Image 1 (cartoon, rainbow, N blue to C red):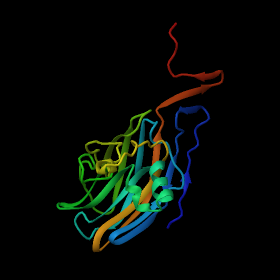
Image 2 (cartoon, rainbow, N blue to C red):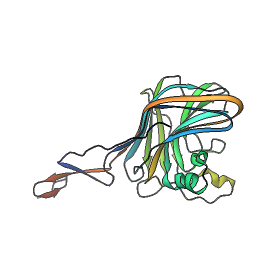
Image 3 (tube, one colour):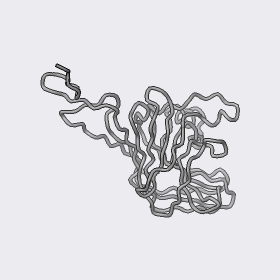
Image 4 (cartoon, one colour):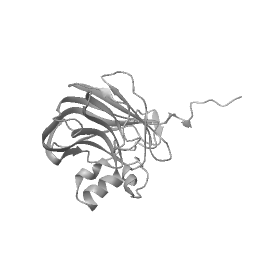
Length: 239
């Protein structure tokens, strides 16, 4: 697996953010391959960001190449996963492929009408699991914009391909395993890992994806000015 890096932006001396400080987490440029029934590969950041208590969060980067052998039998996802689910999958169960849950992604796959990408909240076989499909071809840039429910859980995800307009929003925030009778909590992305993963359900097929510049950046909700006399709000007092 490629080495994972963390990058933090330094705030200017005169400004401070209310809530999450601006910064980014990244996954190093890489290539994932998987094949067979239940084939899986992933790269995940080593630390988290707060993508819940912010105005917006963006997951973006470039998919340099990919290969899909079959229709809806192998796909890759790039997005954020909750710390709860990361710990549940990796630490509790020791099964990294469970990291499809408690997450919000850009999901890409070969559809019946061609290669497509869409916002995803895990299970596309249930209503609300995937959003509007956008056509893709390698290479392509992507921007998954998340507008979270600040102070709560979940939010709405929008996807743009190659700088085009954002598609229709997809509401995220409920673990789709609950459709199978589980009782998992709603998705709180206040501690979110950046994840690139590839999954296949094709006994005879091989799948791959190359990526670079993949990062996740939160945008603070409120900016205040730090003056010499103390903390000065941008709004002036009425005389």
